[in-house]
Amino acid sequence: MILHILNGDAMLPDFQEAGIEGDILVWREALCEGSLIADISSLEFWDDRSEWIGKTYGETKAGYNHKMLDELAKLDHSYTEIILWFEFDLFCQANLLGALAYIRCQPHLQNTQISLICPDSFPGMADFRGLGELNASQLASLYPGRKTLTADGLETAHQAWQAFAAQNADVLETWLARTTPSSPFSALLPALQAHLKNLRTNAAGLTYIEQKLLDIHQSGATSFPAIYREFWRTEPIYGLGDLQLLTYLQKLQDRGLIYL
Image (cartoon, rainbow, N blue to C red; front, side, top):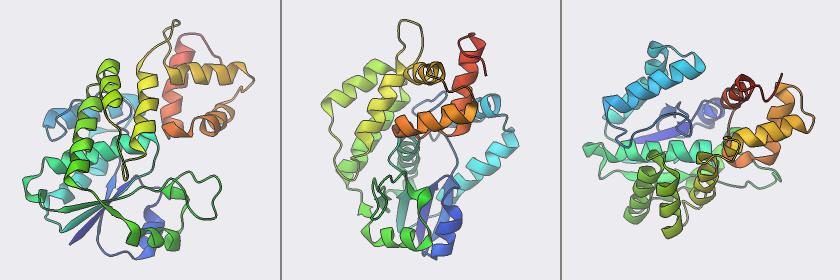
């Protein structure tokens, strides 16, 4: 049996239309934001995430459990291969590390082949932004080229998760300085470097993303959509959606730094 793990719902309709064999698990999280602990298999981890998602985005506990934990329950079954379909930005790379960390904690999956599909380009698309842009036939064309993750690769992902989940700039910087993730994890390094920039604050007490949004606003963008578009144009590495950016903008508004 084969299981496909998709990062979010954007590509789900086209993926289903592609008719690729296997079960589907939709990973509906945003691990690049909010509180984390390293033990992703613990009840504490998911309780903390549910609480944070609820406070930040207004999701109910029941809604979170249905959208995320019910999906995770699919990993209670045994599979011969698990294929992860994730994009190259921080949003997806953080979720990829979380998914691999969770799989690592499942004893019955220790001998399962783990494969990754994570393209950073696609033929004919000059400004490729991710899997969500692809139609059914384009997604199907990626399937034969999936990369099997080796034991060394999985160990690199495990160490990266530990450094990422520490939520400590010095810990992450140390790991990045002594590690050079290779293919198929080539997207991991730039994504985590971007995350490292945002873990620290400047003299004004602003994170990198907060300062960038403030700069965009001060340059003349005076509406939420205009700010979103400029941020997505200049900072695609973060992969943040409008809900995530809205929380940053609300913090800036609360501090009286922007008025929208």
